[in-house]
Length: 220
Ligand code: PGA
Image (tube, rainbow, N blue to C red; front, side, top):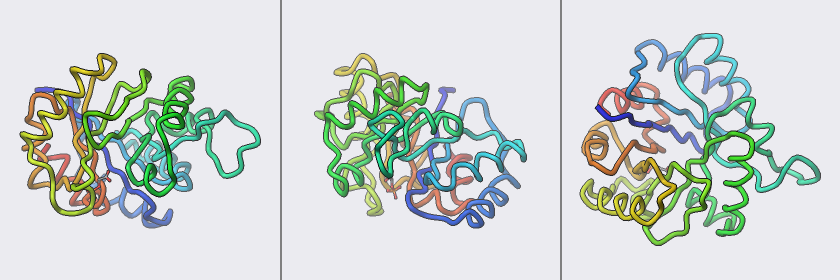
């Protein structure tokens, strides 16, 4: 059985209390599996409380941020540098299409984000929406998320996702794992995970419901 990464991207959702309820519900039925690494990505403001909760309750999941500053600590108002994130997370999503589109993040900035994350020991999960996008050298985990599939209920076909993932691996020798993202559900997760070139999934909407996400982990 291959090792898969199952990533929950909560985006800009949940108060602390809602995040704790999610974790309580998830923990009731969750049993860790060494072949499936679960990574939760709450928004920045939730990270300390979610991190405390999972440590105190011994829930075996990893944490990821949804973004990272392209700069070190210092005079960068509003930014959260990798050196501070490192206390809470192992991973950070970088270059999600919602950030590229809404915050005009370009290749140069994303390269800088990858390098800041890697320098602090935070592993980037670098998002691309096609096989032609440039992937910085420091990114070893890539999430392939076609724009037409994000939040639409219209996932890519597993065969096509596998083909694109294969091309990304061929063209980028630094990339060791590729996740598929875009309308992943408990019904379709297995069809992606079982593809040769796909090493996990990045789940948005369907991760907001704890029992639904648990079902995705179980079915993966
Ligand atoms: P979705 O989002 O699962 O709601 O399609 C995926 C993502 O944006 O990472």
